[in-house]
Length: 410
Image (cartoon, rainbow, N blue to C red):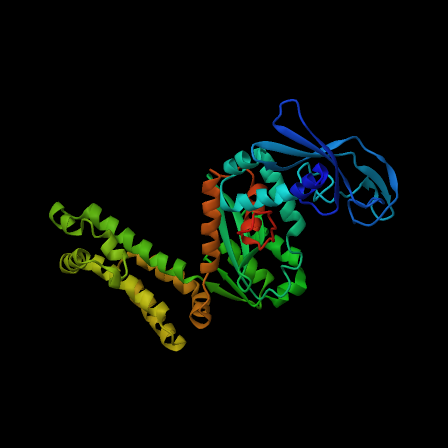
């Protein structure tokens, strides 16, 4: 077999001829001269055949490394005069863009590795820079993000994600049916969410039937203004967290005012009060009995927390509504200021809580996606640019297809 045939198989790109190859002076770089198999060039924008205009200077595209040797593909691309795109650089089969300086095979593998490992490992494995990984991810996402991802959306989840300290947030919109992120933008105000509704248009807005959100007033305002027909569902986790935080606030206030003897009875009672009753250990059940015996206000707060959870767990909507109304009345006369505030908050958002009881939809999908994004952000030691993070979010959670060149098992 000829050397050019061997090199062509190793490069593994369809529509490519290998002419010759040579090592650079350092001996650690292999330069392979290549050219497309077609004679008439194709436009780099629309990929249609177009007459050649002239030839540009020679370029190099970095390819997948072979062992410890960097591989470069060399070619002098032609400029073409396209009736649709004008004068532009011709399309070459080994690259995804006329401006890219990496082969498509390297970009596919870099994006795949960026999903499963940190960018520092990607730079070491492929001998590219950290910024190049960002550019590759952004380019692939821009090319392959589904333009029809807003079609047929009926149930969406909206949540914020903190990507930097000092209140730097992203607003994420998730499609519950397809379980993927369909939109992301810096900020967490009503104007930011309004930008999503402006982008999808009035016709698609009319198709949205349910929105799951937390109790953010900015998101509630935007949804009620732009989707007056849609039902707002408040996530159960956030409702129950209000009661858990109120219970913890009651415990801390009592610990600050009790005498030392009674304070000892409450010591290490926090987890016994916040855990589910069926998850308590023997010692935690004993601690809860001590709380019931020595501190009536704190035990009343514990009962309020558990009763709210029971009301939200009821599978009969009529019974759950009655239990919620009774719970609000009990909390308002409990003489516990944190629970009085929670009762007023729940009373102001009863429609969204009733919607959860009827539909049994939560923001758990959005929270799970947030956990995946948090893992990516920690692995990268944070993101200074929201655009780079948004590209990674779409790559991981936006159902972007990737086709990396991987060895098949024998």
